[in-house]
Amino acid sequence: MTTELIAKTFQGLEPLLAQELTELGASDIQIGRRMVTFTGDKEMMYRANFCLRTAIRILKPIKHFKAKSADDVYNAVKSIDWTEYLSTDTTFAVDSVVFSPEFHHSKFVAYKVKDAIADQFREKTGSRPNVSVSNPDIQLHIHISDYDATLALDSSGESLHRRGYRQETVAAPLNEVLAAGIILMTGWRGDTDFLDPFCGSGTLCIEAALIARGIAPGVFRQGYAFEKWTDFDRDLLEKVYNDDSNEREFNHRIIGRDIDPKAIGIARRNIKAAGLAKEITIEEADFTKTPLLPTDSEQGKTLIITNPPYGERISTPDLLGLYKTIGQKLKREFTGGEAWILSYREECFEQIGLKPSLKTPLYNGSLECELRKYVLFNGRLNEHRAAGGTIKTDAERREMGQKHRFKQKRDSFKGEQQPFSDKRNHRFDNEDREDDHRFNKYSKGDGFKGRRGGGDNEDRRRDGERHGGFGGKRGDYRPKGNNRAARQEARRRFFGGREDNDD
Image (cartoon, rainbow, N blue to C red):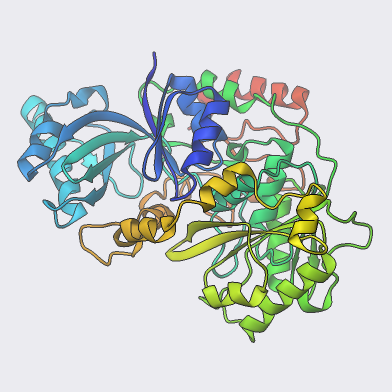
């Protein structure tokens, strides 16, 4: 049976998410504001959680209604038969995002939803389910925009940007969903070498390797909220997990560099946990003193995607001088290549001294950044074009022709993006970055314990492993390595009777 579903994402990544859903086989795809709606069956919902690189969470709407007052919210929620989703023995939590002139605090809306559910159960049974903020059996999400309200089940739980491979992090890490979105935006799919000269904890390199290999981001994941639903189909999820039909070989190189020895160590540990040490090389190097490309690299056959320091949250001596060096090295050492740079400050971009062929506004956390594309070539622009070279694709030309689109977008989202600057507005990406405070169910399980690992899984993490089961208590039926026979054997062991011994 097909149903309506919502995939939430960051501003600017909506078209990429829609394309991912198209490739996944979803139907009725519609792009919205920081979300994409679609329809699909239970398997599609499982695959969306497991396979989508640019989604933050997948919601299953229960009810759409008009919310012009608190009573409207209460009555609409109470009209739902909650025995289909909850019992007095289960726990629940309510998350709310509100952009409405009627409601001045999103938590008030969440309280009204909670009260309506509790009152219905009291009237029917004399008791009520409990609320558990840190470890709920059912997570609900209510979104109100003006007077339009949607109440949905959150099928993801912990934000999908938490892939599960990150062991440690550096200051101001790049969100995994944003990193994957940037790579997909460039069109790179593993057909050339890849270089990030400011790799930090290695997020861009790891996401690039996953894309190049066709490995779904969910292979490292410890669990999903839908596993606690009454209609959870374990066999179906196991089928989704073991589908490696999109995986492929990667015959090029991914290189990450950084000047900070601590960042290099963290990046290598993260890469090892992801089982991608063969695909990624991490080097300690000073950008200003190191040749941009390896000596054996073919000119024009490497893509650069990087997120240099902005001077925000990370102190960098002579920040403008660093960006000037970036521009100089691109001009001198990267002829025929293509570089994509994410940064925050306009004065930094000015120091690069190159004209970008594309500018895309993106938010990195609360920072209003731009991703700029630079195409490097010899001689004059007219000569480059006469020789058949291109600077902008037709799609990029149309996008750049949309005058004033940046300011309009920024103004329309400014209130939403500021962290709690208005009591009515919860900043969306902050909402999902802070999931550790609201969804600790996977960090308190028997196996995986937060980003740094822990428990038995820590001892099992070795290069090439895929680790962790779906949820802490369920054990580990995800086999080591990519061997199909090993997968089948591990699946047989787990599903052949181990379940009865979980407790």
